[in-house]
Length: 77
Image 1 (cartoon, one colour):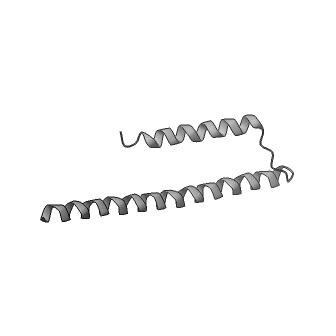
Image 2: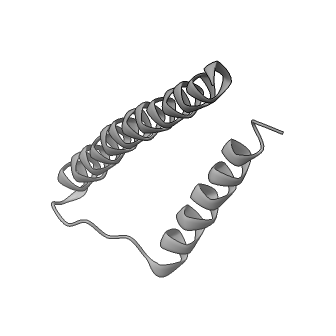
Image 3: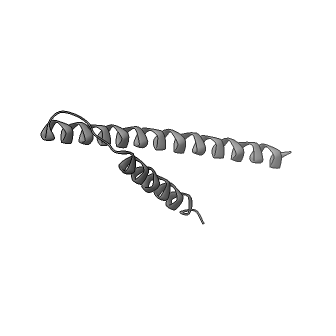
C-alpha cells in the first residue's frame, strides 16, 4: 500500500516538472520571438522603413529553426 502512494507522488512530480519545463520553454520562446521581431523592425527603420523578407530568406530561416529544434531534441539522447 505504501508503494502505490509513492508511485502516485512520483507521477505528480513528473507532471509538475513537465508543466514547469513547458512554461519556461514557452516564455523563453516568446522572448526570443519578440527580440527577433524587434531586430527585424530596427533594421527596417535603418534601411528605409519597410520590412522586406524574400521567400528565399524565409525558407532559409525556417530550415535553420528546424535544425535548431532537431539539435534540442537530441540533447536527451
